[in-house]
Image 1 (cartoon, rainbow, N blue to C red):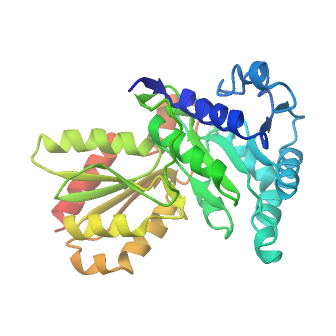
Image 2 (image 1 turned 45 degrees about the horizontal axis):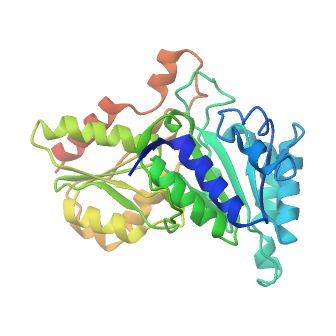
Length: 327
């Protein structure tokens, strides 16, 4: 199996689907000759032409409205937003139109669209281009939310998202674009709502999303040197959430740390923690649930402050030790 980058895996998933299905097209700002803000669509306009790789004006509300409308009429659009922060401008179309149409028309209308967007900090892009707002979207019934952490997951989950007849918000962490993993050349699909145990362990579970999966794995390596066995669970999709896999892991280890990059207050970590507390896993807990998230501040431009504002490997190690000491 060959090794490719996360961004190459995303592009390959789209290319393979577009070759197979003429109803699939991409729209967004600078996605043509320029190849998008992070080069993910580079080279696609040469193969598919400007009708299917459509450069748009700088209007996220207009782009998302066009995507919703085309999806309602039978197309399967992939909308790219240059930065996930800009979903704030597209929220009316996504929340009040895309998420509601199938329900309002009793299932007779579908909105098969994917909104792809790079998220997260780590590139010095500052407060307006570094946010993690997945909890906003996850709160809305009718929207599915995906956060792949590896190239392999990105390709398989994007295939599932493109096949889905519901609107899917697909977060691609910008720090992960250059990371590599083994990815099959053929098309494959990873079901939405199926978590992945990235590392098995017996002493404590870390439930981590996106880039935090990699930091959790690094923390697990450090903790192993001290004789602490860590299991790392990657939900991969926030909506739908694979509660069963998380509950099984927590029931086995008896301790859990939930970590995400988004601000801790109101983040998906609180939802996961509540789900665990309301499940059968609660009876197996030997210590309080620990949550890790970003500080309640805008993401700083200064690289040292930016790093300090979101969880790092030492923070995860400290939280694991805290939950073990509470046992």
